[in-house]
Image (tube, rainbow, N blue to C red; front, top):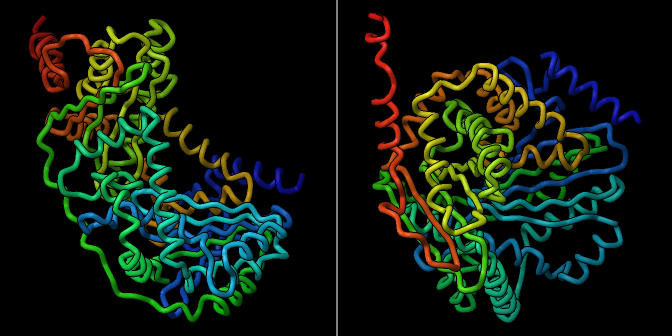
Length: 480
């Protein structure tokens, strides 16, 4: 009951503007209410410790600042995700079977994931096993070893994973969307990589060793420990087992995406029966802790496309033409896509649904949102996040996406402060900047023939132009 009570108190204090976190030079109210201690080792490894009141449990998160974004060499996509697999192959000291057995006996819960910008390895375990876990992880991050046979076996497993994922219509749709949207940037391929590169992976053993030596270095990693721990003990153990990890010097030159030349349209013909999908996307801003462009997109996505929005209520609840409708506006280190996806019940309605989505985007360019609605959404975003920090694993994992981009825990507080700066004028301005025909990417997927339509993309600029022509002129109204 103690830890539950403390969480509730922390949440109430945050809403009242009274919870302050450590190590911030900017001041102000904090969304992340837990104190932390941070230290850099001489080799560049950053260590962040967040003591919590949840007894006995510890969460270790190790984000590596390497994702599919870093796969800049032609023919070599998919290696960041591939190493998520290979990191479980073991070392000379702790082969895969022994490594797994030790963690199993400790009752540890372990996994990993790869995204465009990072790869994260995470384990939740008892505090009594802190040294064992830090030792095991240090060994595999520094001494990973695998044979050509193991490499080829895992490469085939990755191809099998790709084929399994591709059997899902939505996965294939987003793969096609990215390929259509980007011409130069590595966001063009998914974290799985291009199929031709995955098929060639068994021949890339030597390159895999180069990839590991390049990116799995202390200056690219952060160790986050949250739970029932003593920070001094954590730092001593990290220095003991991770201090000899040698830094590297490689920096990938990420190609810059040129200005979009949309609208762009692609269609996926699905071979087996499935409900049709339509996605409308726009090139959007990059993640930022100082500019509120992406924060504005977070807010307007909830205003216009959440389950409480007029569009959702119309298409899903009232008309029942759609059984799924949701926004996907993810944070990315470089400019990415702002997508709204809908699964349509009847193929004849697919262009109607597209147009309703476009009209909603267009409204954001022409009609100021309600001040009350804006305030409610901002409050809900902050409340939902603060309320999610209810265990040590949630606390540690909440830091991952922010720390992996800036290596600074205070980023999380700076980003949430940006929500407070957003005005109705900001939403109008950002909507007009990003939601244009030039930035637009439309993708459809269906197993049936599409109905005839004059334009597969539609035109948001035309919708806005007509809306502005139909609006009464202020000068005319004043004369009456």
